[in-house]
Amino acid sequence: MKTCNLLLAGLLLVLGFAVAASAMDKDEAAHGPTVYVPESTSPALVVGQDCTQPIVISSLPYHVLGQTTCGMGNSYANTCLGLYDGGEDIIYRLDLTAEATIDIRMNPYTSGYTGILLDDNCPPDVSGCIAFNTGSGGIRSILNKTLAAGSYYIMVDTWPTPNCIPQFALDITAAVPPPANDVCTGAIDLQSFESNSFQVDLCTGYTDNYNAGGTTGCTGYTSAGIDATYKIYLQVGENFTVSVQGTHDSAIWLVTDCANAAATCVAGADDTVGGQIETFSYAAAASGWYYLIVDGYSGCGLATVTIDAPVANEYQQWGGVKAMFK
Ligand SMILES: [Ca+2]
Ligand SMILES: [Ca+2]
Ligand SMILES: [Ca+2]
Ligand SMILES: [Ca+2]
Image (cartoon, rainbow, N blue to C red; front, side, top):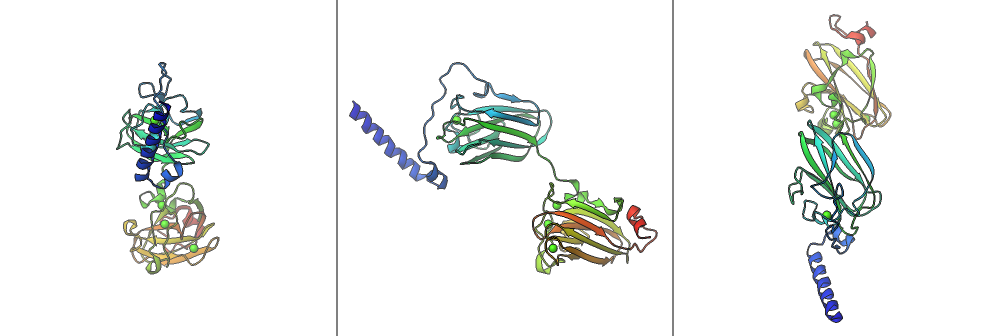
């Protein structure tokens, strides 16, 4: 009998390796054979154990430490997490009363093959979850998800081994949208400033939307850096001189149509590197709105922008800036 069991075990082991080898990828090679974790046999439901008894999250932000899947049972092993749902799992239900854009982060503290999913069904879909994230170490995150009002489910699981996560933290926060002047539709009118100099920290939530176009463009380089936008109304012939000093390799350029920024650039500068000053002057070829893009060759930094233009037209409303040059 004993010999028989050993033979059977050996056969299963060989079969197991054959299956694993057929779908072997880099992660699988590092992980080793998958362990089978049984469903919970405990008759008493623990909150979070399955879809009938989720941990309810009714307000954001949500920050909890000391969470665990150990002891929760392997309730779901056929979800969009693929191999990463064979361990014990925990279920949260997020109730949103209004549309929200959220970031979800799960920190398992220690390394291990962990997964997290977000879905509007429970048990979670086998395919077509709203979002999921799996990996062999570090923080699991689902970022910048815009969700309509309603109930959503979050499941945390593992690819055994580990059979469960002894301790983890879960954070759900409202994603912070970029400042309005990240793009030209929210460009800040330079005439609204009280002074002819202002600072913008491009590293605080701005994104890269505009590229000056490389060697044929008006700065001579691409501007893959993060950018912020400003606007000015210039009368024909009016001179506009601006400089920027960034803690990064800054660039600055002036366009008439942000939807076609590189092609409509009328002036720009990216002649220096980090910490130095970029400057240009422009005499308006036509009356109209001009968009100033405070940018960089790459990355982001704290940019100090100075408008040095004497205002040619006394009738132009330049607010505080106008007063500086009278
Ligand atoms: Ca599971
Ligand atoms: Ca931008
Ligand atoms: Ca840019
Ligand atoms: Ca530069």
